[in-house]
Length: 230
Image (cartoon, rainbow, N blue to C red; front, side, top):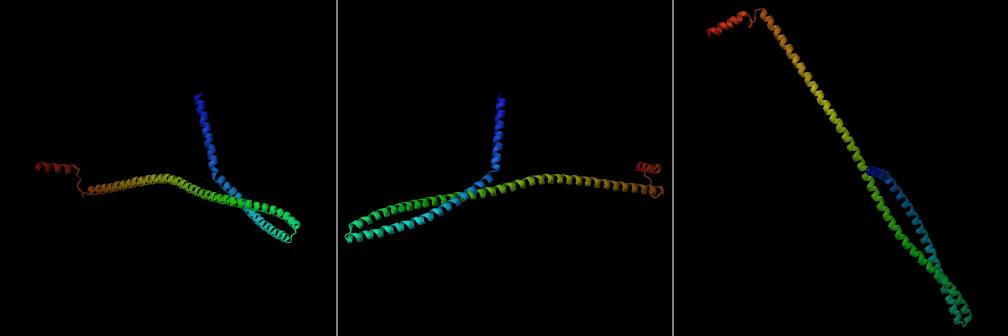
């Protein structure tokens, strides 16, 4: 049972390694896609910021107009009071109350737009910084990956070339040894041929009586006489 448990654990470990290998193999592609998605969201955020800024400008224009209207009708009310027409002044005051309500709503909207612009700008700056750092890290990872692949290729080729070079050196040594053996045989053959030629010549000279035959009976007897006399 313990053996089966260990086997299952090993299989699970192997499956995890395969899964991690697949994920690592796609890591750069996944990271590229994540950066593209982030860039797209950043562009959308900038478009939203531009739209809010435009609405903020329009709201500010409406607020300025509302304030002008309030000031205008306040002047009317003052003139009505100066003329002693309190009833007219009351009607104008009611109009001013409506204008002030509209003005206050415009002020609230302007403040909301201004706050949204500040928050969105801050978020955009932060996102730009994150994307920039992510791109830098990705460039570094890609460069490192390329260098390591090149190094692995060079190492593999160098190992193969070293093996081939060693084989070539061994072959060269064998060729040199064979050539040396062949040269030695040729030298020996030449020496033998030379000796055989010299022997043949000496034989002819002895037969002609030009060279004394050291192995003849006369030569041996003469040598013994000289030895005895000495």
